[in-house]
Image (tube, rainbow, N blue to C red; front, top):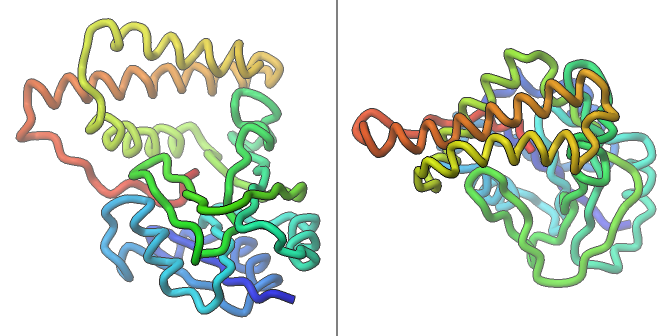
Length: 239
């Protein structure tokens, strides 16, 4: 059986959920943890690429500090024949205490490459990072479990960091200030059927509209007070 490494990035070790480490150890004898104290944070892709550079094995599974592996995924990975160069994994998101089935947080909508051969893949992207694959991609059925935003305060706190970074790459316009928040709400609530998630779907869609508004308000503020705006290190238990 192929040996796997597991990478976990976090602001510090105290934020890593016990079930994250417990399930990681069920598939790997090499769990690499990188905190902001271990490696200076510049962006998510850089932090994750540093983590995989410290892995003993070529095959790497990426975990965030607030994630764990389902029993189905553990079994599937242990029996995987590794006929491809990377594999996507669906992710179950628990937000505000509930598993979200729609609103663009369903397991299939949040399916990404998280298991890969590091000799053929690398992370790219400053905030919404993803794995660039130089090869074939397979798909696993067993999900990760993401204990995502558990309180509104946590959502707003993370949103503040992410919008600061996103605003760095946005050019302010009055049209975008109006249309982007509306589009964010429509996208999550109607296109991704957020209304089927009840009040959770409504409030999450509304918070996404606030997210979109924050991006362009911060982009505007950069144009009027550039000396007062600089991105701070975001919380790294994202995704």
